[in-house]
Image 1 (cartoon, rainbow, N blue to C red):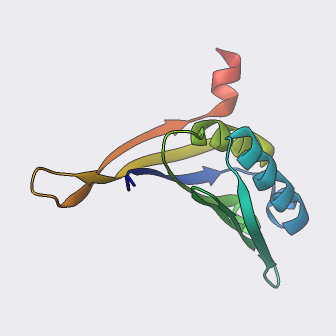
Image 2 (image 1 turned 90 degrees about the vertical axis):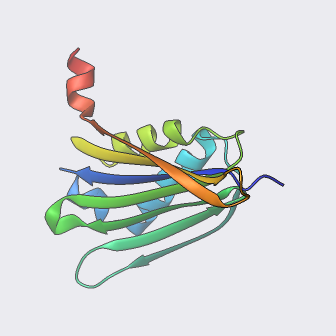
Image 3 (image 1 turned 120 degrees about the vertical axis):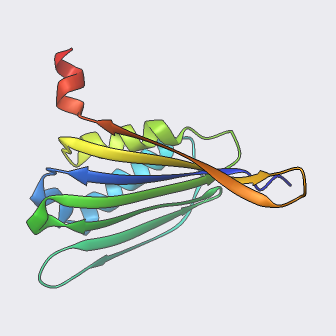
Length: 138
């Protein structure tokens, strides 16, 4: 079995606070994102903090999708880690960002589990910025 995987770390800014503080809505969004990204859901857990904020996890057959929110800052930290080549995590990310109303996102893709010539494992990193509103206007 090949351990190669892709880990996406997403910093989502200027999101809709009401969505970021609603665990039921976030669960719905992440489950739909998993479906869009061709990931098989295994288990979910979401927790609402007092006074605000949510942490949620969707475990998928390839690994996981998670979100941690700070509605008062209009910010969400999103992680998607997936093994194999069958899923489409970029489509899942696009759907999540659109659904939470992110106006800006900084995305880092880490390709993990890369075996070198000596049998040791390493990773590579690629980062980029996205502004969904600007893309719509182009």
